[in-house]
Length: 61
Image (cartoon, rainbow, N blue to C red):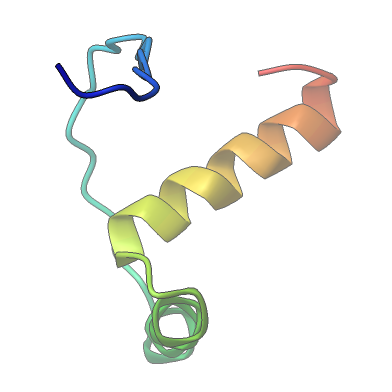
């Protein structure tokens, strides 16, 4: 038997809804820069930005 640490990851499953966005060329370029800098997808970057705005605007998300 090998010793070691067992990690349990508790992920909250969220139901996601598909959303279509129409972006200007400039907005798309900004998402591309975020994608390259942080190595995340444009959809993840968009989700993060929406959550950040909602938290700032409404105090919680």
